[in-house]
Amino acid sequence: QVQLVESGGGLVQAGGSLRLACAASGFTFSNFAMGWFRQAPGKDREFVAAISWNGGSSTYYANSVKGRFTISRDNAKNTVYLQMNSLKPEDTAAYYCARSKYGSSAKLGQAGEYAYWGQGTQVTVSS
Image 1 (cartoon, rainbow, N blue to C red):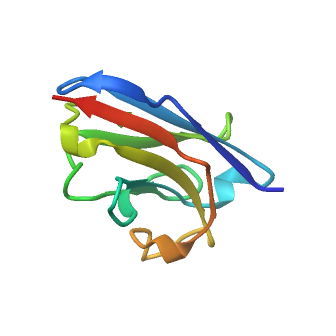
Image 2 (cartoon, one colour):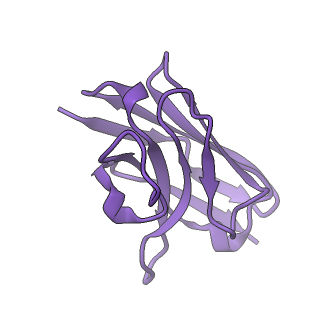
Image 3 (spheres, one colour):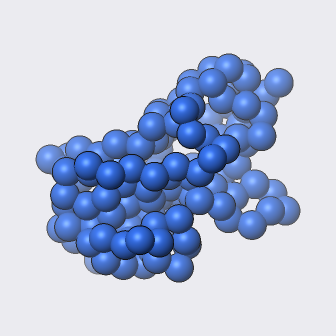
């Protein structure tokens, strides 16, 4: 069965960096776009970043993280990463990895385009 397991979350000071990883199994990883979403307490889940299938030649970012976060994938390791730099307190949230329903989509910023989700990893940024 499809499994997505996030890791790498933690507590960091503002301005610091973290690298999240999502290990995938149970499907042909290179055939699907992957995304990262986050949810802060009392707020809706929001899109963070996505990467296209296969070689990951296309990446997409929320405006709030553009220039600070980088999504990448290693198809040999069935893993997608989220490098987060210049972290801010408003980045505090649970971060979720997700697998798209299809190989490609024009709507990777929408949660409805994803079929499977990980359990999440907590990121806390102190001021």
